[in-house]
Image (cartoon, rainbow, N blue to C red; front, top):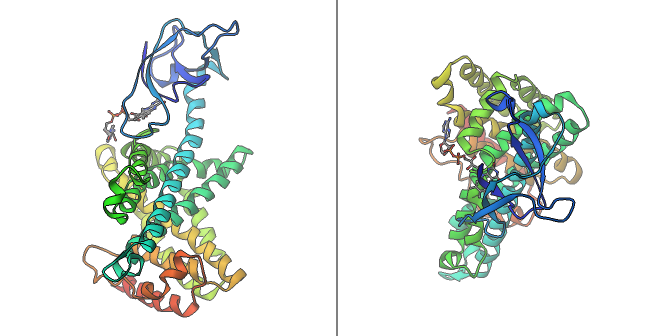
Amino acid sequence: MIKWFCSNVSADVALVLARPEGAPEGTKGLGMFLMPRKLPDGTLNKYKVNRLKDKFGTRDMASGEVTFDGAVAYVVGDITKGFKQMMSMVNSSRLSNAVRSSAMMRRSFLEALVSARGRVAFGSSLSEKPLMKETLFELLLDCEAAASITFYTASVYDKSDQGNVEAEGLLRILTPLLKGYICKRARNSTSEGMEARGGNGYIEDWIDSKLVRDAHVGSIWEGTTNIVALDVVRALVKDEAGEIFFNDLYNRLDAITNSLTKQIGKILLQISKKVESQSHRIMSLNGPERELPAKQLMNRMYHIFTASLLLNEAEVQITAQENYRKLYMTLQYIHRYLLSSGLDDLTYFDSSLLQCFDAIVDFDKVSKGTVEGLLENVQQAVKL
Ligand SMILES: Cc1cc2nc3c(=O)[nH]c(=O)nc-3n(C[C@H](O)[C@H](O)[C@H](O)COP(=O)(O)OP(=O)(O)OC[C@H]3O[C@@H](n4cnc5c(N)ncnc54)[C@H](O)[C@@H]3O)c2cc1C
């Protein structure tokens, strides 16, 4: 029997799914087994790596094609529940994929910022050019947002691991959301980071080309973007995860006390209610019609949830440090990902970025006044 893809093929042990003789067809009949590379007497187990894959990226980890030929493997857990057991591992592997992609986004931003600050062209440093500020800002916004929801999901994962049933339900929908959006977005961020370094970005002397290559696999393995988007819809329909998801979000907005963050919370609540009703409508559809909008829904759910986390962090930062930096990021996030459309007047390119760019990228203080100006812009966009 051949396994067409096997990552980390040189590992000492592998967890595999296999169908015991006489077990039923389909995923129900699969058992989970632990297969060691070496047997207790020190001899090699009976499987062969036919060849290593010649991969586009992740070349520092060997992926191979494997033929099993009488290999010894030990049953893990309940032999009739192999697939279910594997699926619980999928939560951690999808989360770890999001961590990996978020980290690559962050590295791409830092590389881009350092190179733009160091390179002088047309009379000044590239980081002083308005359009480069915008490019760098978007890179940072994406990676800060990704970090926010990834860390939050990790905390939900811990709670679920300790037996919290609500956390288990929330984790069910958050992991495909992260995997679907962040792993795909990392492709964009790493490419933008490469371009920000100009011609040098394309040259193997720098890290950018490796980041671009490595980022691509994130949206393919552990379920492609389409497959995880369908899984988000499945989590809504079959596992009824929508209620937990929206309640978690609404409770966070409810807990906001600062007057400025409250105003933004109101806008976000309005948008989130819209997305919730869209999700109900999609759930009421059948078959192909339900599948068609799955990716759009996944992206929107990702954005509203992430925006609520950013807003929560903003409130903490204002209270602790009287710093409005995170609130600035939140407003920009809401404006860019939830309000601007293909026909707006491009007001989301708020000129305040020209003034506060350095404070933003250096994690310094942003004033309340700067945020109030941006809020007016956002309120205007809500009315449009
Ligand atoms: C480097 C690497 C390492 C890997 N390591 C492992 C490993 O260790 N273990 C392991 O088990 N697997 C591994 N894989 C396999 C990987 O998980 C699969 O390749 C991936 O899940 C996609 O499945 P597929 O190749 O069968 O693509 P296909 O299922 O043929 O999909 C092709 C395209 O069709 C789309 N598609 C498929 N079904 C639908 C649908 N219903 N609706 C809409 N679109 C759809 C997909 O999104 C995709 O874009 C690895 C892959 C790579 C590239």
